[in-house]
Image (tube, rainbow, N blue to C red):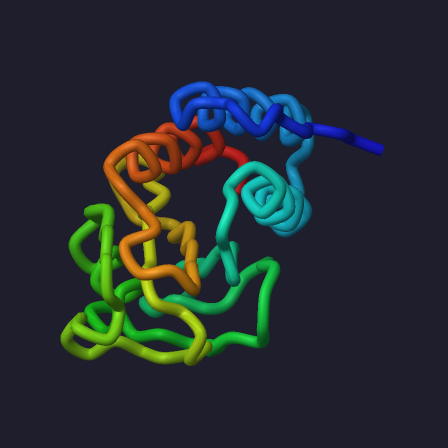
Length: 160
């Protein structure tokens, strides 16, 4: 059993550094990408407060396909360029959305979601997956969250 609890007064910088270190330790030596994504979704859920969904969409045959996650049931397939996840996959750039209801073409898998952070996972310059975080709070995510999940994505890119 793993316990990665952090004190309540942990700064965002410390939180994401510890998340990346825990993710690195937990996936080190494990080649099964599904197992690694599942554990990473659980770690993100444990480390990042105020989420209602955390997980992965994998690139399969030119579209995003649902991967391991924690939260309510989600959309299974998302075309590149559609919604926040599809935009991140198509552009290879992090999407930080304060109000998902104002995002053109937003795909509402969970009506309780108000803000979203989607970070592409790149391997050899190609998007292989996205890490998707949803929150019921508007403007929940900021630049510190984006930088932290981007660092995590880089750290685990060869393991997912």
